Length: 118
Image 1 (cartoon, helix red, strand yellow):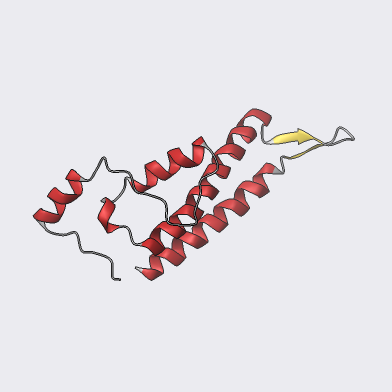
Image 2: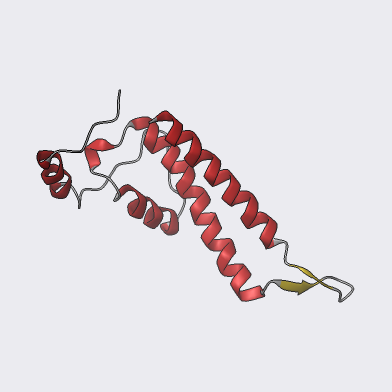
């Protein structure tokens, strides 16, 4: 199924009318917590409900899960700070930087893959 065009006035009106509609999760996909549900709602609100293809929603669920983890680890990093001390008392870079970097790269890879499918 091709992505629906949305460059006409009637499509704009339809999109506006659907703005408050909740986009349902694809079959077999679950969200684990309230943060994931909030991110899902935020991200699905970027398009009208009828413009989401099933494939888009499956990939979006991956993006949502990664984004929820990124938010969690960023909050933890904000609390702990950029530099922490190891067992010997030596200051080191907080390992959360690597975790956040890895998650960001994964998220961007899914986004790039999805954009290639449009």
